[in-house]
Image (cartoon, rainbow, N blue to C red; front, side):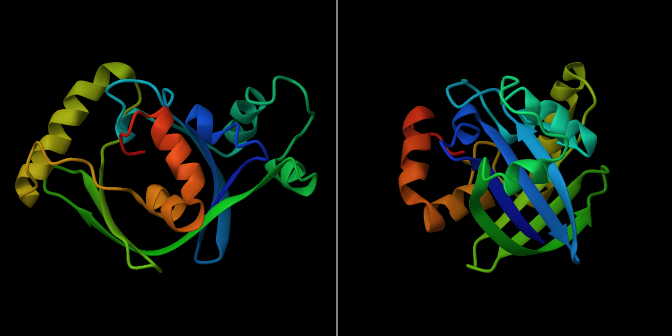
Length: 179
C-alpha cells in the first residue's frame, strides 16, 4: 500500500481535519477523502471520520474551495499545483477477520512503524454506539486494555518523519491530543 496525502499549499485541508489521499494497492490507485469533525472537537476519535470515494471525493472537495476553482477531477488540482504532496506512506498490511465480524488491519510502514486498526463501518450516526461496543469487545479479545491511550497512527508518524513543524502546529490546534 502506498498512500500519498495531498493538501492545499496553505495546508487548508489538514487544519480543517480533512485528509485527501491517493491510495495505491498493487499498482492500482484511487482517490479517498476523509473528513473529521475538526481538530478542536472534544471526544474526537478515528471512528468519527466520514469517508468519501470515487465521484464523492470531487463533490466533497469542492466544499473546501468555496467555488473559487472549477475542477472535474482531483488530478485537475494536482496538475494546476493547487494541491501538492503532503506526505507519502508505504506499508504492508495483514488483515484479519475477528469472530464478531470486525476487521483488524495491521500495517507496518517502511520506517518500521506498526499500527493496528480495528474497523467497524456504519452507515448512520445511530449505529455508532453499538459499533464502539463491538470494537471494545474486540479489544478485549486481543488483550488491549480498554483505557489504553491511542497510539500514533501512520499519518501522525509520517508527519513526524516528514513534516515535524506541521505536526507540532496540528497538535497545538488539537490541544496535544493524537491525530
